[in-house]
Length: 232
Image (cartoon, rainbow, N blue to C red; front, side, top):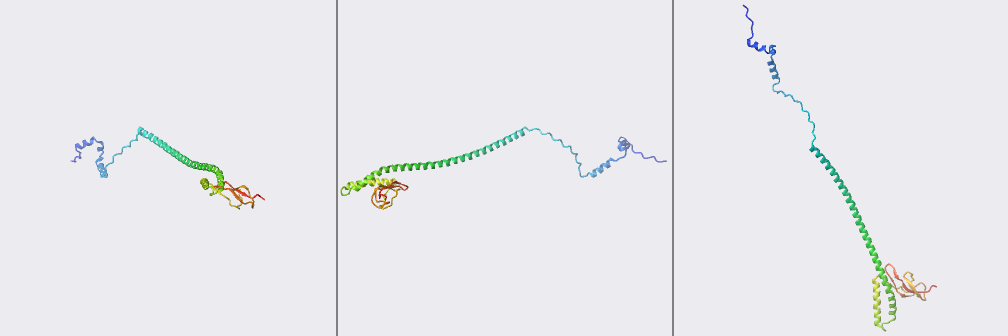
């Protein structure tokens, strides 16, 4: 009698009857074990999500206001710089004008002082000349009078005349006028002498003095009156 073929248990037949992949006899558990062995120690990386698209920039009112303020500040700074430059130029021009005015004032003051001195000197010279011209005739009369009087005859009058003559001569010296008398025999000089008359003697020389002359350091105020011989 032949043995009967092996038949699977009833529960196995029921489990494969509902799963067609299991019915094909493919062992998925072996594949899972192989994958687990290859990936052991390396965790599966999660799938990266796609990067979100950047959002469109939105206008910022604060940023716009700050930008406008910065532009205004730069414009104001440029204006202030321009004003400072202009002010420096104006100050430099004022300094030059002040220096020129100050120098001009100094020059004008020096010129005015020089003119004042010249006018003062000219006025003083004219006044001194007027006084001298008034004193010269008095001395010209007093000197012959004094020469005609001897102390024996009238000593008091001689002393008085001497005092007056000395006082007038001292006043002339104070004004800068000096008396001079050419010596006898001195060659005649038409600049410092004038002829007061003629006398016999050698021509061209002084033969006598009638009136003394007066001079200053610069010029002759009055030539001396002298006697000379007539020309041959």
